[in-house]
Length: 135
Ligand SMILES: [Fe+2]
Ligand SMILES: [Fe+2]
Image (cartoon, rainbow, N blue to C red):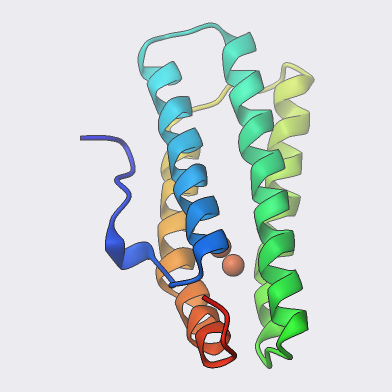
């Protein structure tokens, strides 16, 4: 069993977004594996950067689709994305400045954030996108 298992319940039925969510799960799994196997910090730095870059790209994809379809929940949803991006950049800075290490607590936080967001706000947004012909 992986740290975070990809399941159908996470799908929002928008192919591009589902593919990105699955990709995010997979990077998070890889990071968890790296920590479990005690790989060195430089590997974790690479994976952390990859996770953050891909998250930023993913949020931009969702927000583009929201704007394109006049999603009424856009502002609220974007605020939640921006909040996580801000936290992620702080973590990245601390890690780069060598003041922090990636912990299992951090991975648990990301696990929880990602599953809750995907099952919550992203599902609502997905319904809206589907109603607007985006699959
Ligand atoms: Fe998402
Ligand atoms: Fe989202």
